[in-house]
Amino acid sequence: MRMKQTALKDVCVCLLISAGIIFGHETGPAVVRVVVEVGSDVVLPCSLSSKENIVDKLFDWRKDGQRKKEVFYYNAGIHYNNGHDGQDQQFKGRVSYFSDQLKNGNASIKIRNTKMTDSGNYTCDFPRLQPSQIFYIELVVELTIKDRSGEITGAPKPYIWTLNVTEDRVLLQCEVRGASPQPKVEWKDRAGNILPAEEPQVSDRGGRYYVTLLTTVTKTDHYRCVVTQEEIHHQTHSETYVFINGEISFKSFSLFMSLLVFKYF
Ligand SMILES: *[C@@H]1O[C@H](CO)[C@@H](O)[C@H](O)[C@H]1NC(C)=O
Ligand SMILES: *[C@@H]1O[C@H](CO)[C@@H](O)[C@H](O)[C@H]1NC(C)=O
Ligand SMILES: *[C@@H]1O[C@H](CO)[C@@H](O)[C@H](O)[C@H]1NC(C)=O
Image (tube, rainbow, N blue to C red; front, side, top):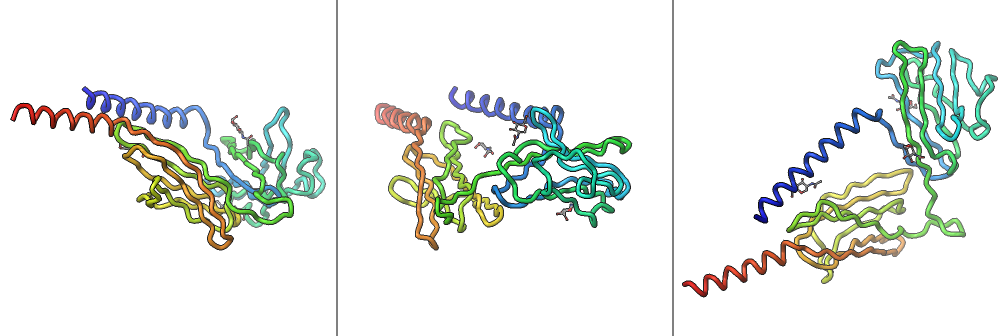
């Protein structure tokens, strides 16, 4: 009975996941997400897959908001940095394009000295192409993790997510956001044993490291994700308690079976 339930649950989860992917494709266009630390420069990507030359074409970058803000406009060599008006005050003097890339259909722009208010959804539009083309880019500008003196401080506490819970196992995810220097990340049980984990996924965003580490646990215990930065003698952790339902039922089931065996043989 228990087995049957689990199988049914797995089937439902699979169906939900496939539905999510399908709807994701059907209802929304592809969005490229770019994350940057406040104050640094960022390139927002936009390229035609045809790679056609756009030196003599028109493209227009806008940012969504209560009203659309004009970020960058280019029309056959005329643009905001050479006299065309209409650019939103927020972006004046901070946006440039890559003139040498236009011949490859690349209309990416660079925004210098990003501000928190630059976060948002951008569109890169080629309204006069046949068919017209539009690209969606989400920019997330994040605060730096610096203390008041402007010094880099140790990694913040990691985030723990409980994923993929089944009756006998739980997939735990530890996520470290924006640590510098690169931290070592480990999963430990209450006794301090290092747990086998998957290969950490590390991304370097301008010298700040984002690390994700997954482990599967099968026992009821307290689990810690420990983040260590040896160079700066910094260690921090977050903890979670996992209760494995199946473990208990399995134990009681074995006990029950042993009793049966004793009784009858
Ligand atoms: C477009 O140009 C930018 C700036 O040179 C570059 O970073 C990016 O990789 C280019 N994109 C493509 C698809 O070539
Ligand atoms: C971009 O738009 C989505 C959907 O409207 C929204 O959830 C998200 O917060 C927006 N991104 C930013 C950085 O504002
Ligand atoms: C969730 O667990 C099931 C069963 O153990 C496994 O087949 C599946 O790959 C897991 N999903 C993820 C995202 O790890």
